[in-house]
Image 1 (cartoon, protein in one colour):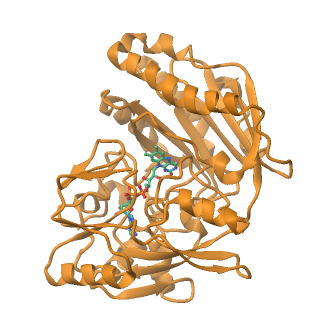
Image 2: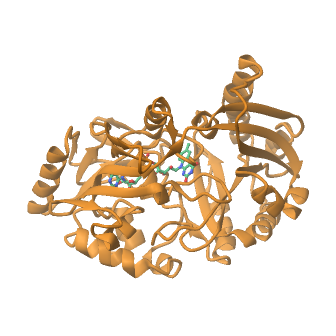
Image 3: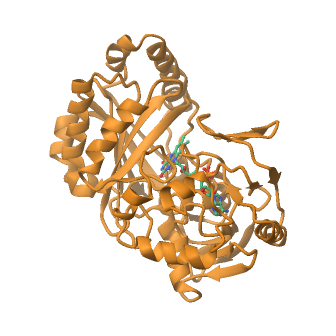
Length: 435
Ligand SMILES: Cc1cc2nc3c(=O)[nH]c(=O)nc-3n(C[C@H](O)[C@H](O)[C@H](O)COP(=O)(O)OP(=O)(O)OC[C@H]3O[C@@H](n4cnc5c(N)ncnc54)[C@H](O)[C@@H]3O)c2cc1C
């Protein structure tokens, strides 16, 4: 979670801070709209804060900050339409538990569940799955407080053009008070994790991506190995062979032991290539569990991240270029490069808008210089019209971003209607969306 101490807000990663004029915690939509209306009348700005899990300054503000955690209730379940409506500040973790209790689930998730549902959709948060979209494309309705404090119901039937854009609003298309999501009956996943040579994996990439419901891999820089995750729907009962082994793999190895390796690498960077070979490259594990427990992991080790969506067919070539670049430029990287895949959607500022996408994510351990590495990766991604994740580090401005999104103007028109006075502006929206 992010924290606010002595008036200074810090995000989860600790790389963004802000000093808001005031922090509000509304408990109702009425209170929320009153704050926005007051801000509009007083010509100041308002920013909704999710869980602060973005690496960019997207939720930072010097104006009024609104904590959304007072708005986290279940509003309605419509079993006929397979939808649920929740208040926007609910975390995905709480939503998962709530849905599971109703025998329901979200069809796909990212790899953590600490985010709020509204923060996740605002930045086009996604998981992996050949036929599955990011979370925002599961949204079938939104209630939004507009820049003058009025409340709008948005759906394919009410204000369809505003709804179309507001699903990925980058915090600029109003403050979402309620979200209606398409859900599916709860399901179990069989998760098979193992290691494979990167070259073999890239050669058969389509086979892996198309042959699994959810396929992703983590290439370990300075090695030829990648760790693969294959998650597939199953009717098998929950089976976690040994709770201790599971804790050892997921909590101890992926967090505490990995954190120790990262700390050592930060203290003595020249050791990083040798430390990388110590990460596991053999062995396979299989577990079966409820989908949300398989999707979401614990993340204790702090880092910064940049992630690009590129056309899926470019994935293998782009990744091999990143691999060569790391060697050629002598970058020392202790964090794996994560690769995922999604289906296209039609949302103007979704990173997968209009194209089947591969996502390539690079990370750097907290406190280590990241910019030279991230900039070199960004240069490669630019050759594939790469679109950076709205919640992760990047170096692009509105001039460059506008060329990457064919429906950019549709988003800007929606912004002009919902927030003509720019009540929801901050330094990040000015940079990436323009004034
Ligand atoms: C450890 C870690 C793992 C991650 N894993 C993934 C992953 O697997 N896949 C992925 O795609 N991303 C991932 N992310 C990125 C993360 O999902 C996004 O940055 C997400 O936006 C964070 O949600 P949040 O609730 O923390 O929102 P914040 O970061 O607080 O806010 C994000 C944006 O949403 C806006 N916002 C928040 N609430 C509202 C509201 N009610 N109305 C309007 N706007 C609102 C904010 O103003 C801001 O612009 C990860 C991040 C971390 C730190």
